[in-house]
Length: 212
Image (cartoon, rainbow, N blue to C red; front, side, top):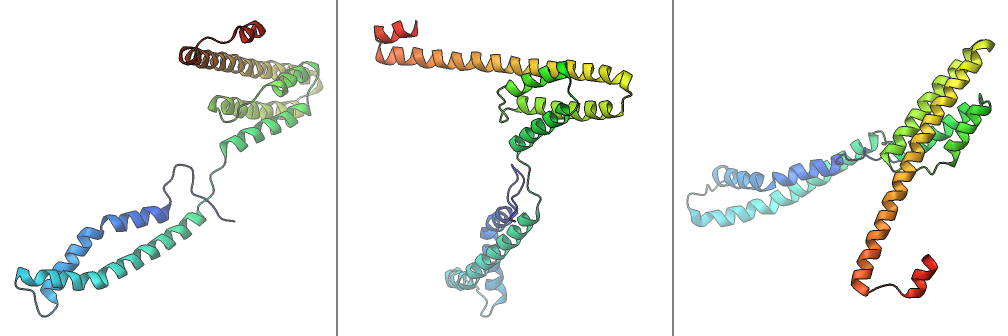
């Protein structure tokens, strides 16, 4: 399976090729200087410099392009050996699913109602705030499931009550995000409506009547 570099990382192949291309002009000039001084006949006047530079270019640039291609290939091999960065959205969804399964296995009446609120929430896993709640839910589920599994019968109800209270808090946080999202979406809708009204005139009376 082909692996991709972590999100935000510069591919090694591109990095190595970029470094080589960055040093191409000075490397060529140094090669020309070496060719002028070390290759016979030695260039002793400016009139002979263009011919020696052209001669240097005939072997320098093909060699440099070959070296760049080799560096790019080596970088691509390095990139393939990198571990693939996990998709945060997929991780968040898996956390919610796993937490729901764990808590569903120990749920009583109160905890079940709290989980129903979690199920009814409109998750937006692309939002970092929802991903944080998913991570907290997963951690809570692991803790409460372990505590319920090891609790003596007299203490199990206490553990489940704690779990229900905690999950209700997470459900309330989801409700708060949903209200905020609704408010922002409505604000965007009003902004667009105001823009269209200013640009194209007032809406027909029939549309206003139906909206009312």
